[in-house]
Image 1 (cartoon, rainbow, N blue to C red):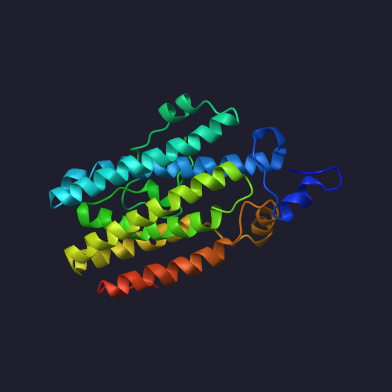
Image 2 (cartoon, one colour):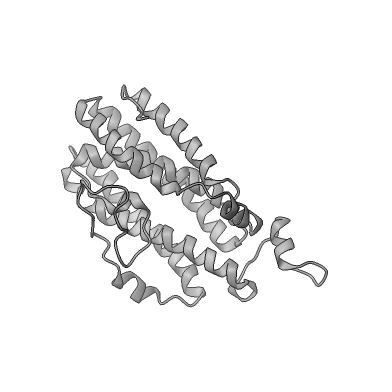
Amino acid sequence: MTNDAMDIGDYLAAGGKLTSPGNVPPRYRAELMRMMAIFVDSELAGAAGFADVINAGPGVKERIAAAKIVLEKTDHAERVLRIMGEFGADTERYVDHHPWTQRLPREAGLDSKRLQGDMRLPVFNYPLDGWGDAVMMNLLMGEATVMQLADYKGLSYQPLGDVFRDVLPVERRHAELAMEGLEKLGASDALQSSAEYWWPRVAASFGRGDTARDEALRKLGLRHSTNDELLARWRESAGQKLTSLGLNAPA
């Protein structure tokens, strides 16, 4: 907690932690709620989309893995929703109000308007096209999620940081399951096409480089790396995964 000799902004910039809604300043609260809403909406929208392809899995093992991913993503959303509830969010209405299965047309461009009513990351605005396509999206977005959670786990709102720290290895396992699934499918023109489709949509999840905003969030202890830094790490890691599968990483 802060003391009389230290402004809360200085306290956060120095690595301090906050532990309850009562001592959170307005700007900090707004950024924290935005972060949590993006995470919850993305997990629930992702789970809803993946649930639709469970029975497209080529075998029982794959269907069990897909069902487990849906369950765990929903659980992750629920854990963060609890924290949002501590800040006064009506969590039941929040979940019921959102059209989690709604998607843009597959051919919609990246400049298409966000679906109304939620804050999911851009990649979850687009529909999956069969099992291989779903697994490819899960690999590329799984790698992105791991990058982001690794940055968020040390954030200055300790209860949320603790949740992200617990969630990180589970989300890492989701990406590993996707890699195993793609290795089993083997390289193909269809998977290369899926990689090329999802690559820019996942990259858009990191947002546009905004040095001023990145620095402001860093001072609040809500970010440690910039969007550009996270994007660069993702491009390298995801590119290596595709190469090992015998596929080409899109430019």
